[in-house]
Length: 423
Ligand SMILES: Nc1ncnc2c1ncn2[C@@H]1O[C@H](COP(=O)(O)OP(=O)(O)OP(=O)(O)O)[C@@H](O)[C@H]1O
Image (cartoon, rainbow, N blue to C red; front, side, top):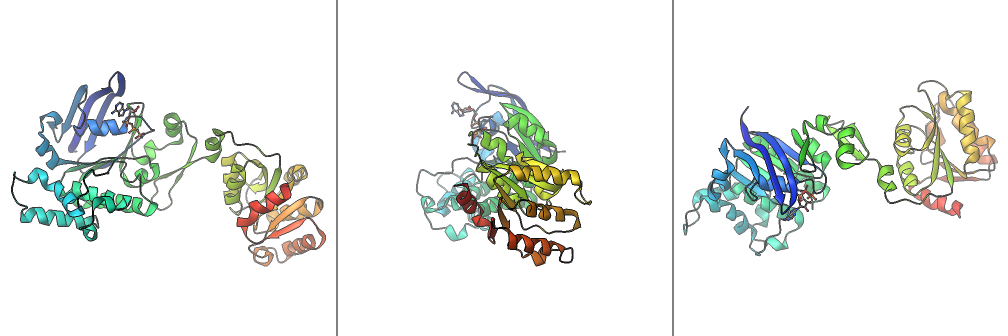
């Protein structure tokens, strides 16, 4: 295994404040590494220490087996390029001139641009799709365009290793993917070693083969995305409750912040309005999050354990009447559900499909004629009745006899309907 960059116990302080508290790193040649960690954990300071923009107080940094301190600035610029966090450029040069600056380490004083310089700059512009911006002034570009130009300038240096500090922080989702795709291409095609600092755990997990998680100036965890991005690690380092699922396409972990713990910090006001939801199959997932974030007192049931709505309700800490999957809802669960329904100010029935197993969830509504009900019917009952019309029969009876029913085709209007009832 060839090592491109290695640090031995590096320490760094700004004035009296200790920022890096002994960092040991080994970055393989040709690898794509992501440094993550909370605000002020020392990520940018580490990047500056390994790129000689700051000098470590103690410890050693080796770049390709040679001490970083032994590189002079031109020699270092041929080996390593840095894309800083702030890509603002003080002088309003045009894009071509900015990218050409990347050739500076190779140019002799007062010499003209060589054919080689021009060829390399053109290639850098091609891979970063900046050719069409060539004559534009740098300060007239969008954030994403400027980011690509600064990466092109770094590529014009023909580095073996590229360090990027939050390369996608100001970019929209499309450009974020584009920049990481570009980095991935550079890594795979030209074997450039890449180190990114990022707050985007999911992009980092998706593209980086190794992750370094920093906490308070020390390395907390190193390894693959699956090894580093665990609920336990995230909680320990970010003090955040997250849900980690496997991205079905990439098999990489996908981190979702759990809204409840997030919102708790803002002391979200609780509403004195109880809503019981009858759902299943993920038909309520989206509006459950919405209603929970608005502070409604929610309950849900009867739901099969493992169902998508059950998972959402669990994540949100909503009261659930649950039942084992693949068997009919039992009497006991029906009674528990009825109790919550009786206590609720409003019942919402999502447009869930009905079979033998959950018909009781529909039938229960006929026993509480005085309760307000919102029935979602974006999909007609015909399309959701999997028991030869039995569900449709109950539905039709309900619609005919119950005066407290609101039929709602569009889930987007749900909150406004609830607000009307609340008042
Ligand atoms: N030039 C400076 N002078 C003094 N303190 C600094 C300086 N730059 C950074 N710091 C401090 O060093 C600590 C680490 O900063 P650093 O920028 O390395 O963290 P980070 O993990 O990159 O943070 P973020 O995710 O917020 O960008 C912070 O407490 C910061 O206030």
